Amino acid sequence: MPWAGALARAAHHAPKLAAPAIIGGAEPPKPLIMLDPGHGGKDPGAIGLSGTYEKHVAEAAGQELRNQLLATGRYRVAMTRSSDHFIPLAGRVELAQQHGAALFLSMHADALHNPSVRGASVYTHAHGASDTQTADLARTENSADRYGGPLVHGASPEVQQILASLVTEETRTGSAHMAQAVVSSFRSRVLLLSHPHRHAAFAVLKSAQIPSVLVEMGFMSNRLDEAALKQAGHRAMVAGALCDAINRYFAAAGAG
Ligand SMILES: [Zn+2]
Image (tube, rainbow, N blue to C red; front, side, top):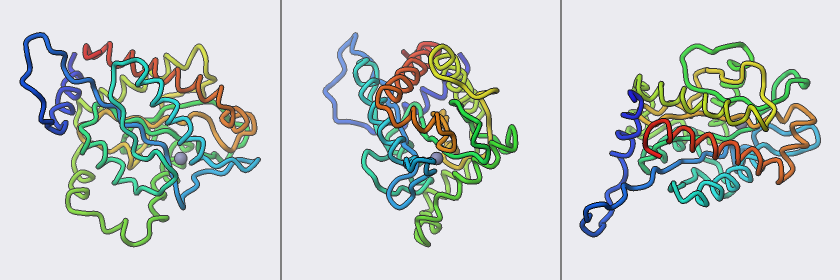
């Protein structure tokens, strides 16, 4: 498949480990999934009507998904954060790059202007936004670095290079396949927004070679979504659907 190349290339960036000589029939290394719980530390993300912080929901869902992915035995998993601290957007992309991630999954539950809108949705990177609601979301997400102070804006040359490089066509196709896998897996068990796969210029999705998606598990601006995402059982169901989507993605790429 044409987009399987993006996986192979991402795997190529994996850190070289001092492993014993490979004997015939040894299994290839498991793909590394980089989970990215949104916000953290001084950046709370969206705050729900009853006071739930998006950063806490994202972190709890991220931990749950990590456990589920590890339980399959098929993947290695890394997280941009596994505690409540601030990471600039470029730093999240850089971590995925450093780890040689095969897939980057950013997890959020932002707020919209319209409190009646609810349901999960998945986003890929594009220069133009699919709709005004998504353009607003990307603008809010991309402003997270304001919590970082002046240091964050003086990104290192390496990070600047990552952000300046173009997302390759293969990566774009891989990201789109992953987004479709998320929609398919959610359809039977998690309420979806209408037109659930959308796109905009999300800074955190701007990796040249690692297929990347951002999942809005629901919206903090909606009472029912907020109440659901506070429940561990609901988060486990969302994580289960995401785990299933990741399985579908790698099975289709022939790497699973
Ligand atoms: Zn967010």
